[in-house]
Image (cartoon, rainbow, N blue to C red; front, side, top):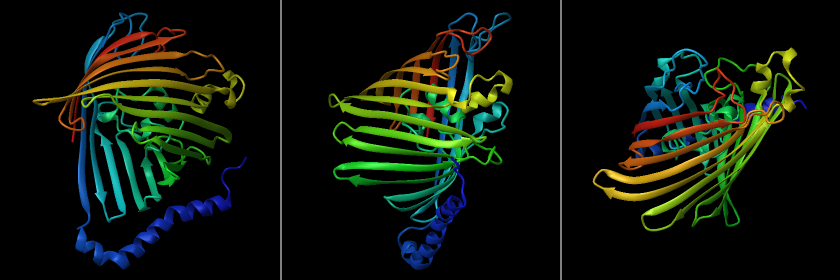
Length: 384
């Protein structure tokens, strides 16, 4: 199937540039009215600091998860995980520009790093908004939640692997988003057109593009039960690729001070990143035979304390099963991440997290990160 055609190019052109025409007209017709209400531009600065202490509890595995058959192993270290600085600018009532950088990336090779968000968004109304630039496309639960308020130390293994394949994490492209009511059920949607290269890439690696969509149905307002469905197709180096997923979230109020929330997410798709990383003469089958799939469960119990500066206590334990190639050379990875979190201030202004990350593979491979390990983590976080 040919994904790029002249009609499609015209549609994309209109879709990208039409909002700016409308924006210009809006500024001409309603500029004086908006000026009397709010003075633009408006600026909002944001930041996030995450520092860690890591202790490997496996004698031959270092803190990065790499197994060493010989030589010394670094089993404990302090690390700055993230030092993010962001700026949200509202140019008008409907137009905003977002910039986000991670200064902690300067501690290593910065190629393809540092700049994370860099996009503009124009909102016509609640039904229709356009985003263009570098952003996190909607394709699951984790894509819509900042890393500083997730219920675990970091995103899941499947999130990062699907990011390498162009579906999640920071990508360059354009997106349509909005929400509406289907009868009594609130529905939100997203359609994305992406290069699929990842972040901070000068140009697309080929002429293929990746198309994805996400639909979320609010099934229960009382228990905050949301059902999400994801799907995507595309071409990478003239090969057809796909990705699908489903997820559900819920939030139950057990008492006035105690709540229980649960996330369950499943994803499956072509691991074309793995396929093209293998020399052509060593590949088995074709790209469709290299498929990844994973599922995780993340229950979280939250208890409000509000004693002096301590706001709440949380306990969670994510269990994840992920296989980067379950059809060929399968090697299932199971990850257990129990964690206790102390919250200070509102909305995770301050947070101290303690817990473990334990990996179990069907087959451990010496001198690689595909090896059973146990890691103890203390993470300190401040956000503004």
